[in-house]
Length: 540
Image (cartoon, rainbow, N blue to C red; front, side, top):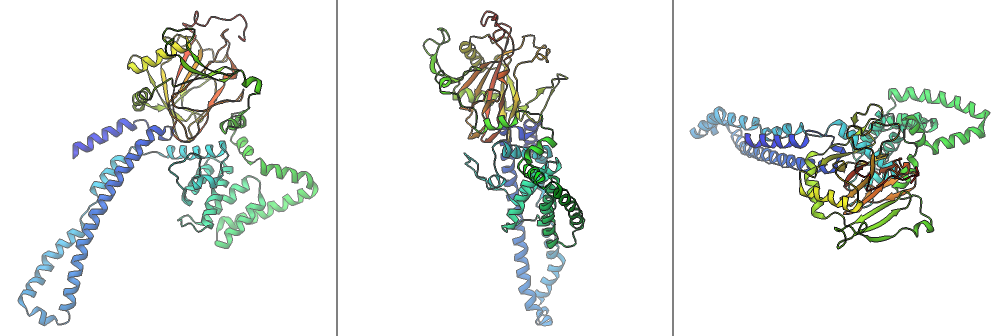
């Protein structure tokens, strides 16, 4: 048994040496099996405990009947020598046995299992990361708190509702980040569910306390005051509510005097303030993404539509890359996704068995995806890239070598100078906000250590279907490419002149429902001199 726990501990250590569970759905699935094992252990503890209590109950019932009879005629009862002997025996031996039974600790197995596995549990960072992911999905896909709480998401198979405590926790995490916009949404949802008589250990007054402060912080004094009065009806002695009541009344009186001077203008300002709450929160949090609105619209499928004339120039075809010998008898299916920049999709370009092999090779190595700090050049994690990745070389498995060769055959580009195949699995609300794959002029040393020049092109495999969300979008041009298992998309990051194509700035939208697996190949300039000759014009 000791050997079993040692091996199990070693296995978990190898699996969870690097946590950040919320950044990879693929690795998060292991936690379900951990929890299942704990439930089995807990049920075994309950079985043992019920068995112990049943023995105690049988003893109590037997003694209850015996003592009731004996106490009706104590002397007569003990006049029987057998009864006298049995009384001595019970009090001297059997009650001691019962004491041992009552004190018997049946928790050892369960507690040992729980203690051993707890060291590999998700951390506060994981819980906060998963909570922020829900808030991100709420904003990107314009979902109400009620919709998320009811579990009414598109493509959902395993519907799950949120409790008052769940909503309250989400609101508290937003509050801790001074995100009063989301604090209000989720505390209001918790209050609604309490008003609908959902049972919870969370008290209404506690929820209202957070909610009124969040509303006040967003400048809505009247609503904050109204909520504070409601709090005091439930708890007239609430110290903070009594203090806030006086403060809110004082501030509201000042506001009304100011409004009397410029009523019409102030009414417009106040209306705008209500309508633009999320924008105000973005300003407070110093959101660094200028194109966020356009990016989120594209993620929702509200992108720019190509004109009929541009659409008419997009085709599907069987492609053999200028009669490449390896593609003559088996040309690939190529579809134009966008014209400028040119983005093409290849259908049925990676098989189910190849996808399985790539996942199996990558999963044990998945680590939190990093970005290169543009100032220091140091690799670091970032809140705008929520995924885990692993790198696979063609030398370690024939499948990877075969995939690399296929990319070379289809693109006509040299793979010897390309980066290894990067496999990525996205986490809860997994995303990668708008970025460039190539190094810009203000990043002259971006790929200096590789010695292979800039990233000339990107090849991206979709290795899973995604029930909702997860598109690859190009905010500058309005293009959106949706995941389809077994396909790949390809585009050039650089013009033939070597200048960067800034229209290729792209993003991976948050995964709303599902598990997104991708793998990509970043192809570099060196080795392409005769395969993609330089152009004379800078923008060619």
